[in-house]
Image 1 (cartoon, rainbow, N blue to C red):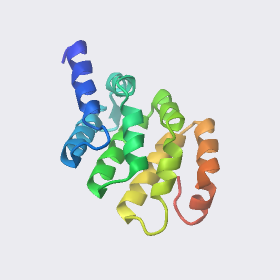
Image 2: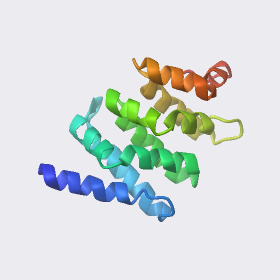
Image 3: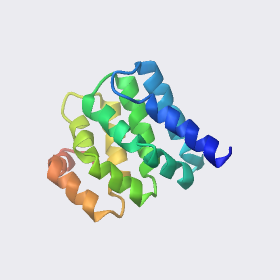
Image 4: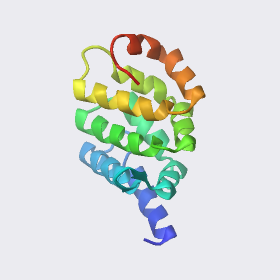
Length: 153
């Protein structure tokens, strides 16, 4: 896919993540963005990870988490954030700057869906990987309490 075409496609997918959008479209867009951010098993597509960030995708995904919504949309947003933060310090920082640590810790609250809690813990792991600022942000958002009750990041 040509550079301009890939950027245009990613921008269009990010636009579908807007609050108030159709949940099925939000889910589909998030899943496709996650797919585009992986070059293969155990290998991120750095170029597309950066394109998603540049198109405002990190902020849009964090906003979806913060606003809540259907478990299906939250699951797709978490998958995409996991792919975006995988071995990408700039995206890890961007998630922190958009308030992502607080949104993720909020998903770990008692009474939430266990599979979303486990997935949020996985995203936090990628968010904090070799990133001291994000570890501190996680702790400031109540992450130390979450860590003590059993979610290992």
